[in-house]
Amino acid sequence: MGNAATHKANLIQAAIRLFREKGYAATGLNEILAESGAPKGSLYHYFPGGKDQLGATAVTLAGQVVTRTLQEIDAATEGAEGFVAAYTELLGGWLEASGFRAGCPIATTLLETVPASEAITQAGQEAFSDWIAVVTKVLEDDGVSPSEARDHAELLIATVEGALLLARVQHSTKPLQALSRQLRSIR
Image (tube, rainbow, N blue to C red; front, side, top):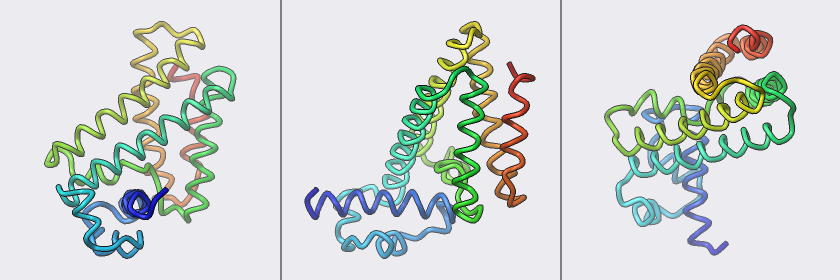
């Protein structure tokens, strides 16, 4: 990857990391630049729409990473219960490794910017739609009817997001473990 492409990728990764841990509003562009190591001019070169455009790009890319992770977990596990157990275990490991500072890679940004930022709102809608589609497939493959699978997938994603918040606040993976144990009651 050339220096210019590296600067753009570093800006996006720094934004994802900082938005996830500190929040969108608490993260300044100078902080993103310092964390990324990119020259100041590169920010507006790659993101002429400024922080809003960078935020939308960060949400899109972080959402795609989660989608791929969900697909990989689906391929590596058997059934919905195994999928949820593996996903919640992975999330718990990430939370513990971050000292409970990093939850969902897009939730903080979305909570702070939606609906004010149309670009970030759209990126968040697409990310959640992709995640729900993967979980819907997992449930359908496990024998749940298509209409129920979609409803349950939305419930599961919403529950995971809530469990991540509780886990961060409690400094414990217990909410994620409880979610995994309770799968039968939401199927």
